[in-house]
Every structure is written in structure tokens, then in C-alpha cells.
Length: 228
Image (tube, rainbow, N blue to C red; front, side):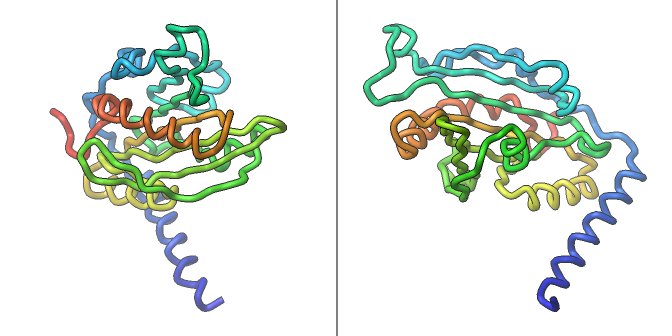
């Protein structure tokens, strides 16, 4: 019980600090962000996308400021009408963006939402992936199953220039940036890949897609420094 006390105190202090920040909120700056409606449906000549959209009932729950839900397929699949021999098929990209998270509008963790939709988590871990800047970032790698269906989910939080895997660190950074920058804008990036052959094949397909989409995605999310 003694070992758990510091963690409990930290959580209580964070909650109290966030309550104070919310009560003292004086409006956040409007950031210069390109709308997802302009996000290209063709990526790097390798992928062709289709906008899926969401029902208004779901949007009312998510309370996003902007979002996109796209299905992307390898261009070769569309040109030939068949799935490549590697087994690669369509995948789904969702990005939910929040201009401010002070008033209860915030991203919903896939680890909470997916089980609520009937999916069972069978694997969950962190993976290190390369970024366009030449560095590496840690993101979530989750495998979910529902009946005979199986999907690999890659997701992370991209908040004010940071790439964050942990929900808890995302909240901690949000409180810090609210105090030091008057900013709580943030986004959830989620990539869903059906597992048709093996989990490893799905992961490699997801990684190939990330390398093509990531440089473009950076143009549509606010960076660490504000753009005037």
C-alpha cells in the first residue's frame, strides 16, 4: 500500500490541477490548421483513399473539432481489381482533432472504445517506429478480435508536436502545456489493418502506409510551436 501511495497522490494532484485550470480557463488561441477535407485521397502514388465519414450520433459523442475517416487501398489493387499476392488489402485511417480539451471534449482511447464495440484485445504493446524527421517514436500496437475477424491497430496521440503512446503521459503533457502555453489542442491517430494472412504481414502493411502518410499528416496537425 505504501508503494502505491505516491502514484495515488500524483493522480489526485493531476486531477486537482486540471480542475483548477478548467475553472480559470480564459480561452485558447485559434491555431492555423489545414482542414482534413483537403487531405489528399492519393498518397505517394501507392495508395488511393475513399472518405467514409461518421454518423452524427457518433460525432456528438466524440465532440471532435475536425476529423477524417478514410479507407485506403494499394493502388495496384484498384488498377487490377484483385488483391496483391502479399495479401495487402484495404486499411482504415482515423484522425480526430480537438482544438481544446478543457471542457470535456477529448479523445477516446481505443483500448476503451474497441471492447465497447465488441472487440476483444488479444495483444497490446508499444513499438518503436521511424518518423519523417529521421528519429523514432513509440506508438501503440494492439491486436483485436471479434468472432472470425481480426485487426491490427496502430495508434498514438499527436499533441502540440509530440508523439505520445501513453494515455497518462498525454494527459500529463496536456496539463503542463495548458499552464505554460495556454494550449490543450490534441489529436488521436489510429490505423486499422485487417489481418488476412498473419499479424506480421498486417504490421508490415501498416508500416509501409505510415511511411507514406506521416509526412502529409504533419501538414494537417498543429506543431509544437504556434503558427501565427
